Image 1: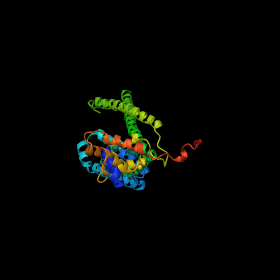
Image 2: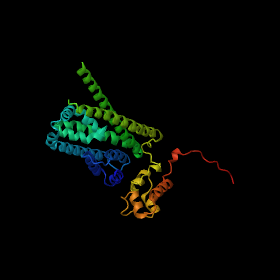
Image 3: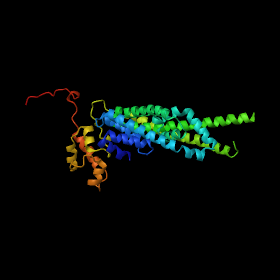
Image 4: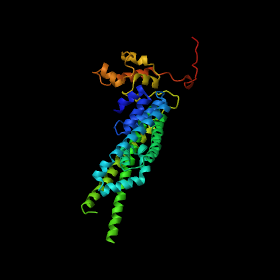
Length: 197
Length: 137
């Protein structure tokens, strides 16, 4: 899929890049990060104009994020009906509200694999839209500057950058899951100690 | 908390730690290998033309390759015996499937060979400035 899209980005330029980043932000598995790094390289080679690629890419990504936030927002009532009585759901909502800013910012560019669930939870948990946009815009700018910039810097060797970044994101996700698991285990142990005391 | 949810939560915590460890080990190794590749491949300095034909991929179009390697597109189309009309926006893979369906990877290898043979000569400034000695006949 990514390879077909790369050919089309060469042919159709920045508007198609914007569309790809929009679809990627909606959760379609089309390798948006790979295409973004490649677009940086194409800009360095003079195939794309970097200002228009960056601008249209940013607009596409933001529109996709807004739409997925909206999906979460409109599914709020359904989720509340289905899981509203669950303590785990209430805890998850409260926990998200506490760390929402950091989560939204870092899932835009560092742990991109969980960006869509984050948007849906943000919309579904009643997180303020203006705040969501603040962290979203900052994160997406970081994503475009970092990924596109590395592609630009490495030019025709951009595939190495793509390989490294995709694995690095997985590594960070693994560390986060591991750290969260350890923390939960620690909390459970402390609770048990308290009960026993 | 009910007695039923406790073992379930315990399992969830163990699951998180296990998945976290697997992800960390798997992606950590891959990221490390990717990082090591960086040492062997440096991007060409700004303004220099790419010369490594091994970077040509079958999703690339001929005008794109022509621009990257500074080899005229007509030369590549001529070698492939394909007309540039209606083919300039097609990837090497599509051209292969269309014109050489029985020869897998033929277009890619031929384009690599053509680019290698027609790359622009290196700048004379960077070549040896030694003047050959003339000998009287």
